[in-house]
Length: 400
Ligand code: FEO
Image (cartoon, rainbow, N blue to C red):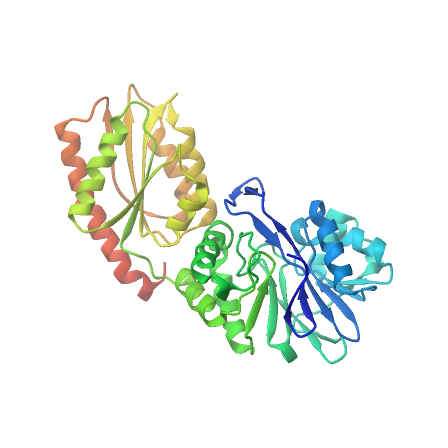
């Protein structure tokens, strides 16, 4: 996709990354991504954000094809290199251009990209700059995803550029989310789950900001441009709220079948009680799919064998992921099968301790699953059912 006009004299000039499959060496991107840069032609010519440096030629071609021979301002909404990495190249090509950003972002741009200080103009929260017929207004929106993130609003066009916030890792030539909302919604959720979930309290404020401003288009820096503002905000509101679903995640690893058998008993018992269940074999699970389940679940069960005196490494990895993503889930249960001992349960508890989850019963058994253990799992299912329903009922009232 070359450059594309999204509003009169406002153009998408970014780059689609069809091949990217992992981000920050952490986040899965099964459908690629895009780095959205936006060009505004007014008395001043303005570029909002840039692209990963390895795709800079695409950005430069798009700017040229849009008929631009000089840039006055480059707005940097976020210092992470997928949006800022091409600023040094642009400053070489357009030596009169100035970078506009906030003081914290300035510090990071100098630190990470060695951008000369005299090339950067800083703006205050809510400050405005006239670029001709239009005004740029800058809103500090920290912690979506780094502490320096900000959004740029153009009141004359009812459009806001939110960088990572409301983004989606999706490579597509369909520029607007209304072109294929069903597909976009899944990727917006994956993006929220993998990147934005830890910041949900901040996002609540930014949703209000979007509503207070007059906005009919949200232009993030990954994935399609949202011309479906109401739909996006409504969807996000549910995710960042304290509402959880009557749903239990069972995340397991099994080496010789004992843990697997225990998981199948628990799954059966929960389904008998009409509790929704999502079961993940963590040796085969895409962390993005797991993170998406975390957006909704009320209860998490980890089931693991003891291996070399420890929980299975995949369990440790996913427990750390839960700790980092800080989901709304309130209840934790653990199932552990072992051969001769270990510190498995304490290890998982220690990783998740910071989340202050409500600890349900833990089922620990040696060797093959026996009648006594099956009875313990049946009792655990009763406990999970009650705790899950209680969470569904009380979280929206008391906060999670
Ligand atoms: Fe898309 Fe936080 O960078």
